[in-house]
Image (tube, rainbow, N blue to C red; front, side, top):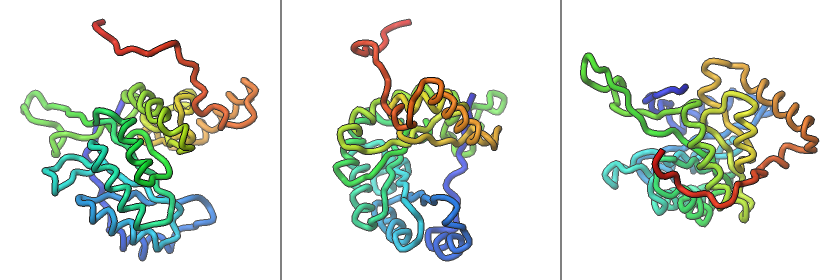
Length: 251
């Protein structure tokens, strides 16, 4: 039902990508988005400036990285720190900015609003949930980093709720959302669209079905035809809620 990993963000560096990798890509075939991370606000700004002078189409800001100047707390878990990162990245580029929101925070909607105020153009919702696995015979964590990011079908209900919550903030601003977290079928993708996503991202599902994207697209087309929708955009946020939602209490 999911994948727990701590593989990190290994890469040859922003300059290595811009100078050594991008020249070999076919930009007529698809869109390319750079994922920017950093351990300080200054690093985010520097990497964004490097990619601003490149042919990529957009920049995704990974604000789930730990802030080394603030004791290791993730940028994305604090709305003010999140907004600060977006602000410096916005000043460093004219390219579209996609802020990747973390589910490991108290109020994701408030964070989204602060990021909109700071200049983000879109959101990716959500990043992985933090989790742990333990080897009971050795009595130690299975993962070398002690904890890792949980993705895959197990987190889909949480991801759907977070997309719905962020959509409540985004819809009045016209800010699009890339919904992601456990998509393994066309039905999953349609759920995210109904919750408020404009587009849908696939990750863990591709590990066990590399052809999943084509199957999801075909399933969405079939759904649109069956329900007589003219365009997939008609699904975004078309969720009919049951009265006022309340927090569960007990079992």
